[in-house]
Length: 79
Image (tube, rainbow, N blue to C red; front, top):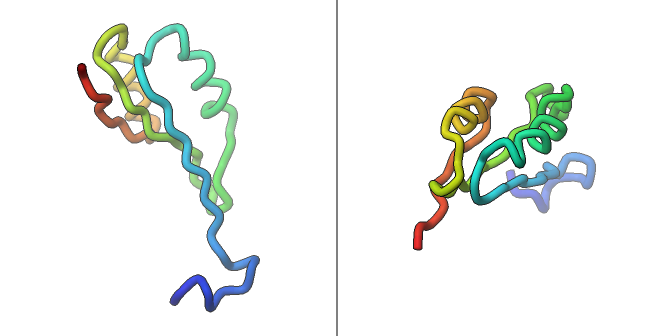
C-alpha cells in the first residue's frame, strides 16, 4: 500500500533520535531521563535511539548497557 492511499490518521508518524560522540557519565543521566521512564511507542514498544559512538572518552560498558536496552550502536568516523 502506498501512503497516498492512507487517510491522515493512518499515515505512520516517525521521530528519529540520534546521538553522536562519546558515551560516558557526562551524558548517562540524559539518556536515563529520556529512555528509562516508561515512554512507549503507540505499539507498546519502548522508545530507542541510534548512538553514533566515538572511541575517545567512551565508556564501553555503558555502550553495552545501551545496546542491551534496545538502542542501535553505530560507529562514528575517526579522523
